[in-house]
Image (cartoon, rainbow, N blue to C red):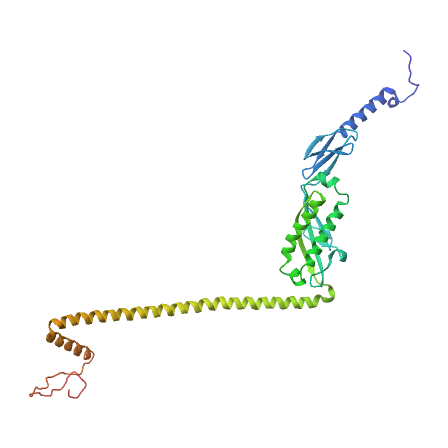
Amino acid sequence: MRNVNPPNMPAWMRPTTVVIIVAAIAVMALFGTSFYIVDQTEEAVVTRFGRYLTTSGPGMHYKLPFGIDAHYPVKTRVVQTEQFGFRTLSAGVNTQYSDEVFPDESTMLTGDLNIVDVEWIIQYRIVDPKAWLFNVQERIKTIRDISQSAINMLVGDRTILDIMGPERTAIEEQGVALMNDTLKSYGLGIDIIAVKLQNIVPPKGVQEAFEDVNKAIQDMNRLINEGKEAYNKEIPKAQGEADRLVQVAQGYAAERVNKSNGDVARFNSVYEEYRKAPEVTRRRLYYEMMEQVFQEDKGTTLIDRDFQNFLQMKNLDSAGGLR
């Protein structure tokens, strides 16, 4: 057999070796472009020739090799955050914030024509990876623009004192609903979970005046609370005293009525006895009256007025003197 290889040709340049190397590279490319792994926090959108094919969950999956199928991982199980009016340099125990200011994001006009600086964050999660990838091109910019528009509108409907005080929670709740409605109409495929207002402060030029106003409001609320506390303390006390006096009066009335009823009943019974034996009853009543009159007296002696033979005697029980 005739040798077709030139003399002194290296072994790796021989046709057989080259074919083996090419075959090995092809096999590696085949397997390398046929399988992909999706993380636990992600879902993968798979396209074939650039057109949407399917969405796969976490794990290892097969796709057609050599770029026929392509996959795009999307973090659907992670809550993502956007900050407005400030930036965080590093999060953790010692959170650091950037000194840079963003007045184009935070400066707003309130309903009573005051200027206020509002800093806030939004938290969202991707719920439709297909819509997230294909429906909107400038996704993050769209989210930020919609959020700024919603907060500006809600702040513009309220006074500055309400924004800094009792309306914070209402702004957050209405902000979530308003942003979700707008994003749903855009088909962005995300869900706003929370809107959290951070710092709400007036501009630096009038900040001291607003601090005085806030202090006055706090003093007013404190005095109101103290007044309510005194009211709640005294009113029940007065009500209790009034109830006690009413009960005492009712008891006294019941006592007098019962006593009167008893006197009437006693009089009726005596009258009935008097009708049966007037002389005996009259004498008994006389004795009872006299006994009641002299019940507490200890120095009086009753004698018959017609008694002629009466001798005075000294009372030896007393300190002296005749009785």
